[in-house]
Image 1 (cartoon, rainbow, N blue to C red):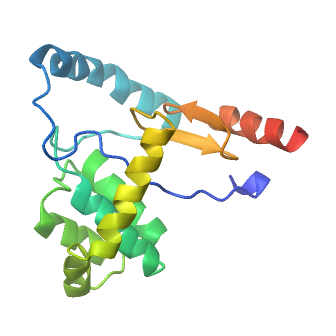
Image 2 (cartoon, helix red, strand yellow):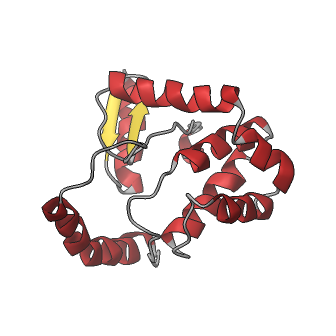
Length: 171
């Protein structure tokens, strides 16, 4: 939100962490049934064509990669590339070969990126973010927390985010 000099700090969140029990078929069917409406909203409100990647993937490698990309000053490019790969190109961001290609396209060198996926410091940073999300009692994404005080859940229009910022500035 450049108009209000807001800095966005990305945090990690795992919807389906490794070891999670299988998702009940009825719940998955409900999600799948809502996809056409989700796709239409993305098209109408945000001008985005959605072609989502595989369901229920392990996103942790992509999250660890984000911590490495941020440390290299390429966080924003990496986030955009991963989102485009998953949500528009239907790529499996849990596949390390695919993820390395995405990282390269975002300006990161392949081999150091792949090595970083096994670095304890980046894994620990993801775990810290996940624990913070638990403290906030988050159970879905997107979720934005403003001034460590205001939670805005779900994909919201820009105007809603501006209202939150203006409320904070008025306090």
